[in-house]
Length: 88
Image (tube, rainbow, N blue to C red; front, side, top):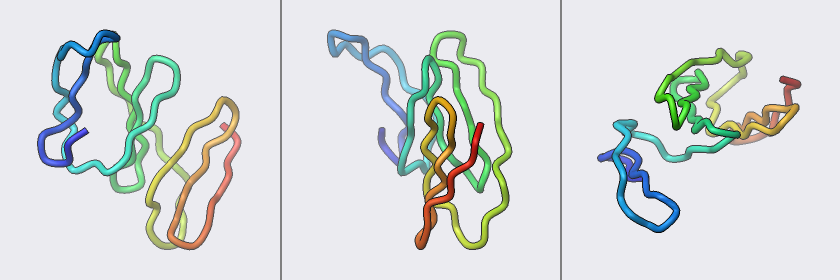
């Protein structure tokens, strides 16, 4: 991941495949076949094989939400002062 260029995708042998044009990101996560990232309090999920993108609104939180981590049953929203846990 490069903040100015996007996300570079490689195969399991380390061969370059493509570049995803998601710039300005500091963190991404993976859940199943989806890559996910947070922009302006909205969760973006990008399907790696079909290239379909969807968004998921998140609960409003006071202050800035820095990162989101998705588990199987819970979403963990990280702020500068707390971790909020929501059931999916």
